[in-house]
Amino acid sequence: MTAALFIVSEEGYWGEECIEPLTTLSDAGVDVTVATPTGAPPVIDERSVDPDSVGKEFAEHILDVHETDERLQNPEKIAQVDANDYDAVVFPGGHGTAWDINQDRHARQALLQAVAGDGSKALVVCHAVGILGFTREADGSFLVDGREVTGFPNEWEEDILDDDDLMPDGRKLPYWVEDEVKAAGGIWDAELDSETSVTVDGDLITARGPGSSAAAAQTLLDELDAI
Image (spheres, rainbow, N blue to C red):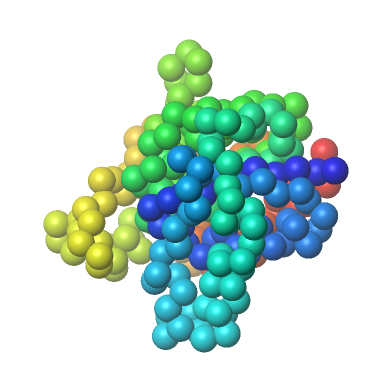
């Protein structure tokens, strides 16, 4: 059976970016395991389930899966799972990833293993793409150097942060995804004129944001079927 590991933030994951791929892969028969940095249940960003922003029915669906899915409620610890045991490793986005997943050495190692593995894939979504700005190969080079990627763009970040880079909840965002990925050598194109943005470069799949989650999940399934 095809298996996927989801590495999810305890600081605030974006609902659609986790739930859409998780349910899509599960419905396709993929065996999904969820892991978080400490093994505590992941925390959902309240903005991603705001009925006024995403719609009442959709918000209720996302919350229902978040609250009832046993894999989300009883995750593994990242340090205790081996990415080599999975066909895919998925990194849902959300601003919260800036404070935990993207800075976690075990998460970065899982990403390296997924991209370097024999036929395995990595899907990295939205703010989680920031992990590429901190993930280095054994020789010190950045994993993303020379790779084509998409992710959460500066243009969208400007609409969320104030002039001091403070989030609506008062937290200061430590870095901007686009800046870090470009600085690490990534070939960045968030395709702002397109409704969705999913980029495949070898075994690395990146997706721009919430609206690209469904396309990203299907792209991952297509890539896994091609193995």
